Length: 259
Image (cartoon, rainbow, N blue to C red; front, side, top):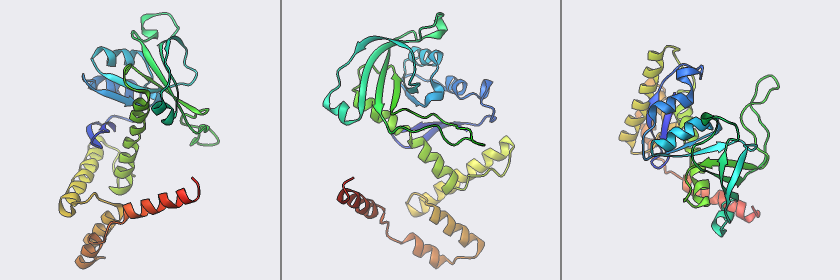
């Protein structure tokens, strides 16, 4: 399920269901190509680091911010000094470069690219099966490629941090709304399940004026199964939300411990 996620509002703006091969028409980069629009900023992970895609986004009048490989080859056009705010944000390098040293028009961007390098906790690839590894690791830095040449480096780092909002959305979609496992492998069945989850989410929000939680969904399921009473559901919905209090107490504890 290819999803365009608006990080400003925390909501998906476009969904497209394809097969799971991730090749040809179902390749994530090709799906994005079909959806490109002007005056957007596309924030992507390392799989989308393709020069031809960068050129298409730039040509249509939009911006991109994409994680690049740490061993990317480039020629430096301008090395920029880092301000105090950038250093506080963990930025360790800000440079305007020409990427791609291979010959051929499709082997390099047709515009200047800015590389913003952010300090990160080193970690190896992990999550693979049978002793193998999967997912990008890093050696202590995250390299971001963008055509946002005039945006402060600390803002570039902040924009990429917001990319993880889509991971939180999918976690909510799968774990809270019960879409962790598909009940059908046919496209029509998958879409029916997705629509039912969205409709259930909207109904809960309209009725309770709250974002659905896993416990609320479970309580309503118990009610429809006849296990919970209406009074128990009402009591659950009327419980005070102490999330902010707990988070502040946790932050105070870490601060007291020196972290």
